[in-house]
Length: 81
Image 1 (cartoon, rainbow, N blue to C red):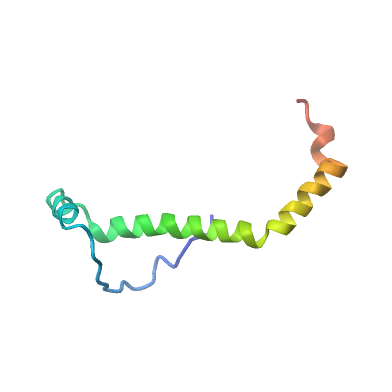
Image 2: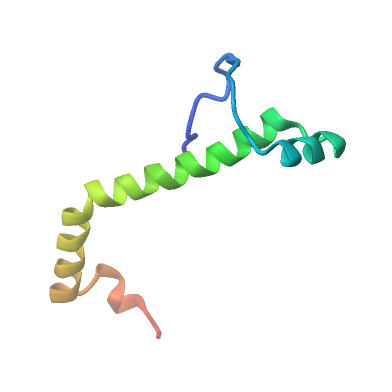
């Protein structure tokens, strides 16, 4: 699977605003905020890129589906179900 981003890129400090109670609980539980944010952002970026790819390729996907519906698939003769 292709990486969503360059994992070797340098870290960059940033400021965030989050719920203070949530922050206190996370710190009390020794949750690594940076790692948690990176994991959550990785999921969000992958999902957004996937949705964008589907939207950008909607016409081609539709055309291939229509072609398969009309002509069948090469593998149809090999299926047992």
